[in-house]
Amino acid sequence: MRTPADDADLGVALVVALLGHDQRPAAIAEAGILAAANSDIPDRQRDVSISLEKIAKMKFDSGDTAGALALYEESLGIRRVLFEADRSNEQRKQGLSFVIEKVGDIKRDTGDTAGALAAYEEMLGLDREVASADIGDTKRQRVVSIDLNKIADVKLAANDSDGALAAVGESLNIARHIVLTAPDNIDWQRDVSVSLERLGNIKSSTGDKQGALQAYEEMLSIDRRVADADTSNLQREREVMFSLNKLGDVRFDLNDTSGALADYDEGLGIARQLVEKDAANPRVVRDLALSLDKVGDAELKAGDAKSALAAFEEGLGIRKQIADANKANYQYQREVMFSLNRVGDAKIALGDAPGGLAAFEERLALSRDVAELRKGNAESQTDLVVGLYKIATVAVAERKDAVIDEGLQILARLDADGKLNDDQKGWSESFLTLRNGSQEAGAANH
Image (cartoon, rainbow, N blue to C red; front, side, top):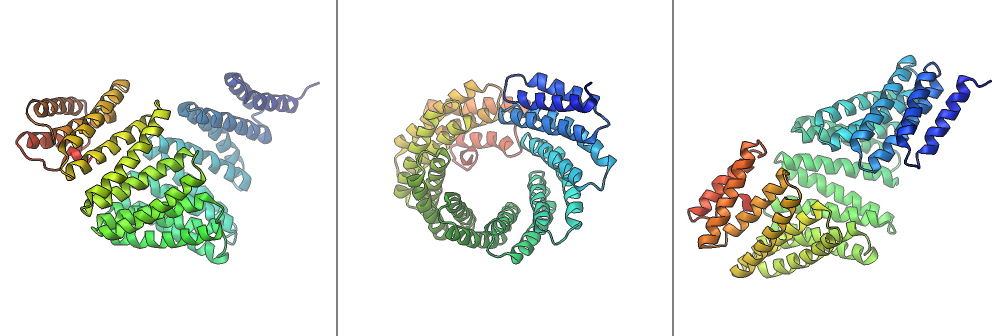
């Protein structure tokens, strides 16, 4: 005679077996039946939650975030019941924290900042309890540090810079304490670097550029040591490049153009080396294009438009290759637009107005193609507006009037639909200023 436990074993086996086939609905149904049939058997309930989480991961990996979230939340309900039945059970506490994190990650990625923050704060509370049970366990303390970084990210996204600063400060203190116990541990050194990056990001976003500079300089020092200790790891070199770019960005904002260019140039050298070592990696190739943009921006600001144009054109060539190979990738098409903006700006700075206009016209044509494919998407429409504005800064007579009129019409429509942010609401004034003969900053900066 089969027992409920036998049915449980069969149910879990069936759920797991179905994970690799196009029978996920059946697997989910089986998991639900299993949960109902074995509600008084904790181990079976845990097995059901694990099965639901595996299916949820598959849905997430296939792009079905809504389906993944629903399954994670179903699993979360099971894990809450198990936890409440035995709050002292550390394994159940950690299992609950794991699923809460998954829920928080999806809510964060889909723009539900409040929901993500609530999930992360609950996760942090559970992980603090686990860590406090053994304060000498560095792994448990490290989990708390990572939790705090996640909270810092969502608080910053919610414009709570003070809350973000407090969270990342605590995370950094924990990470520094942990690394003192094993200074040669590369992963723990990286934890300090990651927290320093967040600290620098927050300080930069709140206008404390000097504070950001200090954080990024310490981050770079750590990343160099880590890369030197692990020379075969290309990701470590990539992290040095990113740190250099962060430093360069702050120096650029502080008008230390020569300092920024030095950082960007070193980062560009690393980017070129990485492409030589891993040319088939599109992420590494995009890094090279980004580094070229940064070098070009600094050269243009320093008055060397010729060198800037060379960097921008090389970057544009790279971005076009990537976009042509990934025509369905909207972000890659946008990156081509941004590169065309830079090429056009550099040509105009060199006195080549026709060349600048040609770059802007190419950018506008691409903007129209993307906007047509993504009808109703506000970002695609504002990209189109920027393309129109760039042409209006160079064109004359009827062409200038036509693009200004079209830009104003699109902005009026977007504003009526409530799809413009505060900054974008000022773009109409920028177009009107151009019509009156001036070229003050406005949409051209976007």
